Length: 331
Image (cartoon, rainbow, N blue to C red; front, side, top):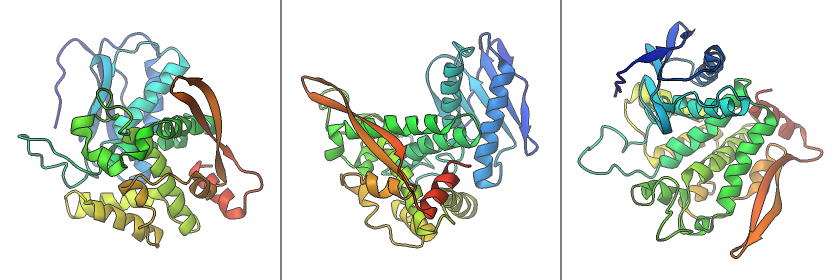
């Protein structure tokens, strides 16, 4: 689980977090403020580590492999498509930070906190799991939160990220045909973003619906515990129980049980949002944090109107709603 990059490479000034060195090595990284990038990445690492309380590797390396799209996570490094293009532009830099935050968080969520089916692998066939919505969808969710907690994004940007996921989910007719569980299992045939070819509109992307359901779980737990617990506690429990103690992946039932133990209530009805195509109740779950979603019609074509969904704060929230929102925003 360790990639090799050979060539005329450039290394940026490394940084330490909790005494552990983090390096960035890249092929033709281009001209931009390397120190600014490393300062931001240090904040990302610190915000991530704060959730779990420990760094499970001896050294971590960000490996920029040149132009392209996407990245792959590993136990103590990540390979990312990176050539420095446009990073002198603040907006482009912010997008790159989100991208790297996602790949970095994967060393916790999917490499260590992993579905039972995802390791040890059978390399002779596909390794299907119903839990990619946890491995990828919740990583998208934490990508947003980590960047906000690190002080690298404001509340408006955080809301805009969820606006995109909600809008994509609600405008996709596939939400009525395929559940998160089914989308996770079908990724080998449909792809991670749903079917794009012969049968469009019959599937969903767990990259879109996953973080929305993650948001709902977080608010459900916070509401049930008077904001004493959150999804962070679930992630810690999975990390310490399955990675550290049992040294194996978790099952669907064990993931739900971990959420229920932290919340202190049954979540059987809630998990219908995972196992079925039950429509998402934005009013209920966003309301726990004093939020709502506004719907606007953005335009139309021969297939009808596309709706835009935007998060906003409700008027006159109660004390618990204000407490949950403030805590969730890291304020």
